[in-house]
Every structure is written in C-alpha cells, then in structure tokens.
Length: 346
Image (cartoon, rainbow, N blue to C red; front, side, top):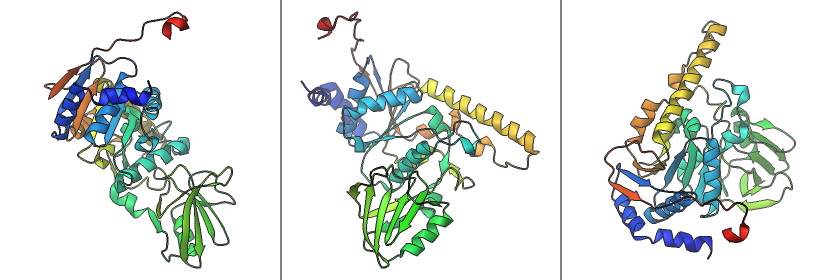
C-alpha cells in the first residue's frame, strides 16, 4: 500500500468528512482533535486541507518541530502547496545578524499571500517567527517591481529601480538582493523567490522571463510575469508594521499545536526584544532607536485577539480553547519499541 492510498483512507473517513463539512460552514469556531500519535497529525491535517479547500496556517511549538512536520507534509502533498515561514533575526534589533535565506522565505510567503498567486496553501511556522511583525501590505506593494513579458519598460529603467531599492550590482547573481546585466540580459535575485530570474530584452521590450539555477546556469521555468522584492527587513525597516495574521484571508484555517506553549513563547520573545531595546537605548542615550518592541513585535495578547477571526483546529495533548464546535477523538497509539528486531517491525 502506498502513502497516497493511506491518505485516501483518512480523507474518506466518515468522522473526518463530517468535520470538513462543519469547517466549510464555519467562520471563526474552534475544533479539537485528540489522541493523535506519530505521523497521524500530518495525515489528518492534509486530509482536512484537501477536503475543505481552504488555505491553512500550521503553528507548532518551535523551529525543529516545524521543520520535521514540513518534511512529513512533503511526502503527502505537492510541495508547491507547502510554504515555510521562519524567523529572520538571530537576535532582536541586530540587523547584521539577519539570515538572508530566512528573509527570502518570509518575503516569498508575504508576496504569495498578498497576490494569492498559487491558490490555497499550507503555511508552516512557529512562535518565534510570528513574534516579528511584518511590513504592511501597502508598503510591500509600493516596493515591489512587477515585470511582465511583452511590456516596454527598458532595462535601464529596471536597473535604476533596482538600485533605488538597494539591490547590489555584481558580475553574477549568487544571493538574494543582487543583479547582473550583460547585453540584453538582466539577471535578478529577488527576495520573493528561491531562484533568480533571467529577463531578456529585445530593445525596450521584455522578450522572456525564466528562473535559472545560479550554480549551473540552467533554465528552470518560464514566467509570464514576476514580482521583484528587496530585503524587506533592511530596506523597509522604518515602514509601519502589522501582525502576520493580518496578511491571511479570513477564510484561512489555523491549525495549532499547544496554544499555551505558543503564547508563552510569544511573550518570552517580546520580553527578550524589550530587553535588547532598553540596552541599546541606554548605550545610545535614546538617540539611535525610536521604535520600541510594541511597534515591531507581537505579544501573546495581540496574537490571541488576532486568532479570534479564524477557524481554529487544535491538535495535540493540551487544549486551550473552550466549548469547541466539535471534538474528534482519534484512537491513536505510538509505535511500540521493537528493540532492533527489524523482522518484527516488518
């Protein structure tokens, strides 16, 4: 039996189909699933996601759990429907300690949510990532360069805009935020895609747009249009920030494991940011930083308020919300130890 056959059994299970029907008709209720073991949570969440046809946000306790869960999801569903939303800072208020790879993934998620480019998706994240507020939609659109195949915009104009947005010119694009040009070809590594774009011009007209591998230079996929986004953590640091939940459609289903753990971690991250801010204020006499943590970070209270507008599904061993619309009791049990007896396991 293949994994997809097992997933089909879950998807067609009578209790899960009933749950899916109730979720479809619900706007901001709470559902709970208890008794899950091992990878059953991944099977159930994918089954619900595929049955209700609504985007989902999966919130786990920490980065390690989020990555493990994403690995399980990748075996069950198309990878284009899975997005990972990480934290960007290693330490609050330390711009030099930003992880560019994580900034790229965050920008890609925000860009897709803002434009709803690829339909419904499952976004996997954790408390530390949600603690950082994000640039508002208006500023993101304002600082996004949209290029369409067939339009007349001219390479020089695009290069000028890239320079204004803080992109660095280089001989070869090798990381997000860089561009190179030769002849009628412009290579750009946007912070909204994990591969750079190669844009070919015929005069001032955009003749073709495609992604390519920066290592071997082999083209990957053709595009009719692209959105080029700068480093939103550095370039848009002074723009108004909003909570990540503000980017989600009100029809998004939020799946959360351990609400009390997540809220406790949000408060811990907020207090950590407040501590760094106070230290920096003391070092600079209050001159260097004017925006306190309340403008840049989300605490537990704000997160709880933001969650009230969504359909929420709690899973795991502990429940936070009261009076659920439906409680599903799944009689799961962990795999027993087999003491290296692989024949017994088989």
